[in-house]
Length: 154
Image (cartoon, rainbow, N blue to C red; front, side, top):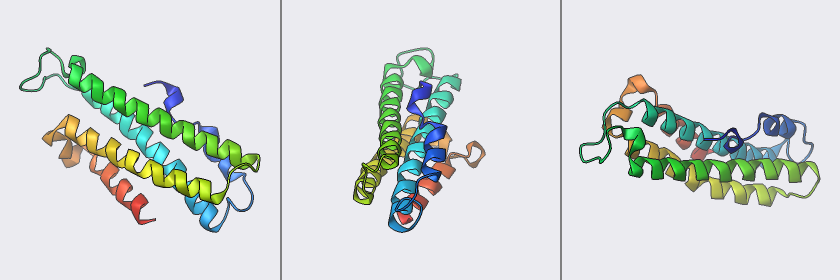
């Protein structure tokens, strides 16, 4: 995954510098959700790529020696990278537009609503791809589900 698929660190710092309506109430909530969803998607994507690359065993019915070379895994990772790129670009664009007075709270709320299913898909795909062993507490991947549910509750 390229670094461009991760929301730029300056997006969050630029967002912190925005004035009203972005620093309070519904504006702050919506902007925070957009940035948090984009970051979650990027982290899940990076973790999925790293975990897949680290696997030494292939799937039972896999057609390659290594899981990282399996076309099915590669397709899932490409989909994840695409979700991450879209989420990052959307978050960066919202912050840029808000800084120029060209975005509304409604725009941010709509974007947050659109990123929520992408985040769910990213987390679901991570667990489906990595299989049962990904649910082991020692991997810490359950934190992604927790964060996803916390975002849904906000």
